[in-house]
Amino acid sequence: MFLLLSIPMLSNKIVLLTGASSGIGSTLLEYFLDKVQYLITSNRKELTEFLPLDSPPSNLEHVAMDLTIESNVKKLFQHIKEKFRRLDVLINCVGGSLFSHPIEEFPVEEFDTVIAVNLRSAFLLTKHAIRLMKLNGKAGGNIVHFVSSSAKNISPKKAPYGSAKAGLAHFIHYAAYEAGHYNIKVNGISPTYVFTPRHEREIRNQMQKTGASREEIVKKILSRQVLKRPMYSKDLIAVTELLATTDSITGQIYNCSMGEILSY
Ligand SMILES: NC(=O)c1ccc[n+]([C@@H]2O[C@H](COP(=O)([O-])OP(=O)(O)OC[C@H]3O[C@@H](n4cnc5c(N)ncnc54)[C@H](OP(=O)(O)O)[C@@H]3O)[C@@H](O)[C@H]2O)c1
Image 1 (tube, rainbow, N blue to C red):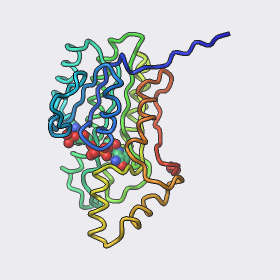
Image 2: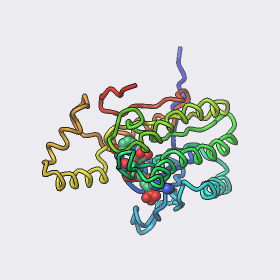
Image 3: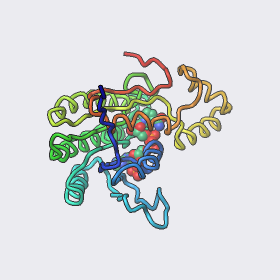
Image 4: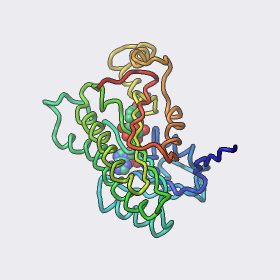
């Protein structure tokens, strides 16, 4: 007896990738571009600022905007609806810890910004993605958000970031519960320390500030990992592809921690 398996493919998918201008998002942009039917990217920077090509690929369109503002997000999805009539996948990499202070010194304006960048944008993108993906009927859609291990562990002086990401993790459960009705799968990826160019800059700053060597700083970062090598953005490609195409997984947060056991 033959078992007929349907292997999910991206080649016929319209995909929105947010936060594509740096770090994890820019690695995903590079990987997914020639695998999908059409890729729409969105973040504040213009395409020429982060993808300096003479002629951008024909299946790529970039929409530069601040995704913490609902009127912008509405416009983005209206545009996708008019141009493609559908959206199959949203991969959301917008986020960042942005500021570091003890709680007693954290300016409330900075707190609000961190919540907006990490939680409000995810809420807005999910809200408008569900509205559009609903129109796909039985085919549904896939939404993938980047959470963080800071939602569970303590990242010193980053209470608003950890709180926003913890909020995002439970928001994913709610969104999966509601959107499951339309076969829209909503999941999260929760990495620990990813050696992105931004983190490499932070390591260099720390070396200058403390006099510690790169080896000492990296050793400390890796100390809680089971696999003793740095995690790079490319290590997140496989799990992103899985969650961008799954037809059976929803409401899950995948810890990408190189084996570190995350608490709670
Ligand atoms: N790197 C890590 O170790 C790590 C660990 C755990 C979780 N994460 C999470 O993974 C995601 C990606 O991290 P990353 O390290 O790759 O971050 P990153 O290099 O700082 O990139 C963040 C992206 O978000 C975009 N962005 C920020 N504010 C925005 C806004 N208001 N509107 C639209 N776009 C905005 C940025 O683009 P523009 O500046 O062009 O707007 C950029 O493309 C984030 O959610 C982060 O919290 C990262």
